[in-house]
Length: 148
Image (cartoon, rainbow, N blue to C red; front, side):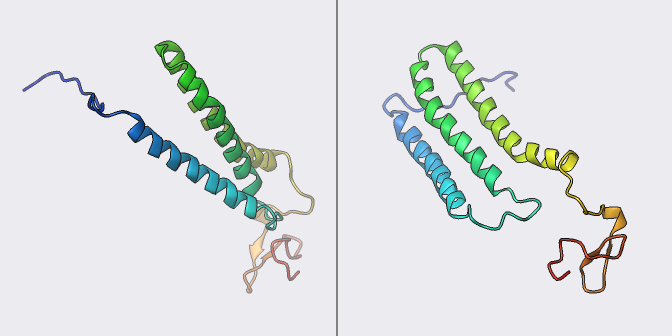
């Protein structure tokens, strides 16, 4: 039984990497552009919902698109230097991941801790009525039910 092995995935010397890289980049950019298009056409939907995320998803996808537009040419420029290539790839992954996470979760955390609307009851002080609507501890219907 072998105790050590080394594996490597690469194309054969007769094949060029562009045959694999080009369709991958086209598919990735196509999905991103389509997602941006969907965000654009849904931008005027009702934003009164408490957990409406359309604006933040659009901002994070726009950030990813900008990072890809700037990052891919920089990767091509530094492709001959292994240390610079690795550093740029790590920075691109970090920027994309942190921008997505920040745009999605920071507004929710801010709203949870600092932006409390007036007259909103806490979950523990409200109860469900027979019709399924919420009533606050004072007996008034909450803003969730438009029939109040």
